[in-house]
Length: 88
Image (cartoon, rainbow, N blue to C red):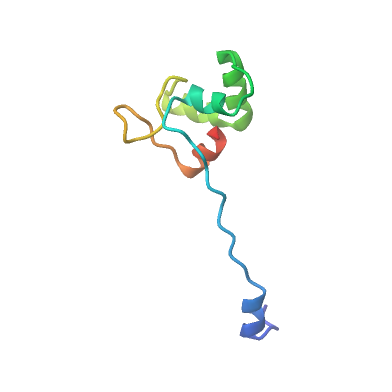
């Protein structure tokens, strides 16, 4: 970059926004089920959450499959951007 003229450097720079995350205002269980072609057992839901890394978040926060996602609901949980991507 130090050898480039500023106008040349700016032509080579791009901005790429992170993909949006689609989380539904329902339970953690239902958010996992929505993308499935057939109903999943709770064990299968937990396995999915383990493979995505979200189960670690659940254990650390004391959440269950029945927790509702969305801080605007009574007892609803708010998710960080990373947590939302792991749940999606």
